[in-house]
Image (cartoon, rainbow, N blue to C red):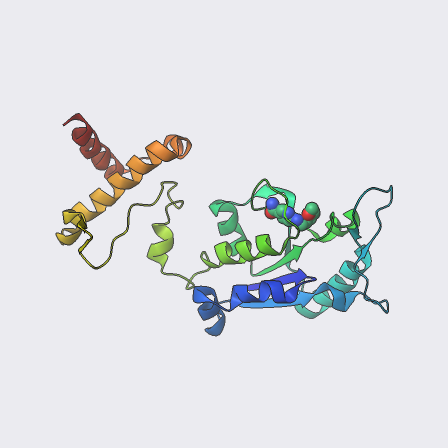
Length: 243
Ligand SMILES: COc1ccccc1CNc1ccc(C(N)=O)cn1
């Protein structure tokens, strides 16, 4: 999968491809991440990317011409990508949107700055995405979040099991995790996890996920489709609560 990012701050976003599983996926060719500087497509001497807003008002607006120049170059060179704009007006990102974006061969993420982007640039945009209901000084952090979340759904980037057990994969919150030592400051690892009984472990984990989700995210709990393991876990949970 190829992901490109268009920004006036290329050094800001570069780190997203330099660490962890994303950098490994880039190294072994599962992911291609390319960063383009919008300023390179501003043809005037001062490489201007912003200008005063028609109609007045505070701040500046991103000029359309550099974007038009960029897309002329980009579409001819790489073919037409699926274009995402990160903006406060977008659909709020969640796992299902991320999974949908991960199915595209070729994604381009546009990062806005200033008060916003000239509306005529929207002709290139397929999807507007927000990472939450707040305004940032730029679209670069949302672009990095999208690259990270989408990468996890690209086959081979992370262990399939890990994605399958994603707490939000089956819309339950994650169970507690433990590793060595078995005891630290008198705090012990739950015995079931040391029992080696995988069925018991899976039941315990599911019970913990259901308990945590019921308490912290009743909205997710109500949406959850209960499978056989869930039912056994819930029974065990109720027995525990009644005891
Ligand atoms: C006024 O800013 C803009 C206006 C229009 C586009 C981009 C920006 C850049 N800012 C952003 C971007 C994304 C998010 C988000 N919630 O995903 C928040 N702020």
